[in-house]
Length: 126
Image (tube, rainbow, N blue to C red; front, side):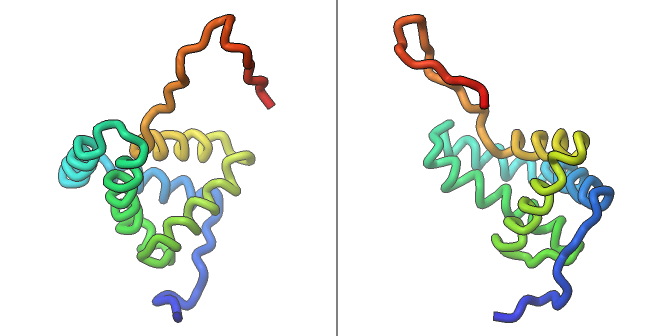
């Protein structure tokens, strides 16, 4: 299938910051905030339901912003944008920070199960 946009989306780090900021801002638009709240309510903090209800809404919100920057208006466009952002995260702390803020908007905070000294396993930072 041919993409609607012939040229691949290639953004500089500075452009990626602008797009990330626009995507984050799009989540705070009243209509999108309502859509995300409804999706979260439907998901009931269940990870499987988060994937079913929240992720599609979050993807649509991102698509609306990134399509103006040459990304395809589908899941593949969002994945390409995410890979591009990831490629800049190690080089640019501002991009890493914006990326974390974006992820926090649609991924639930990961809570680790309680553990005590008798848990028998430890997690080493790598």
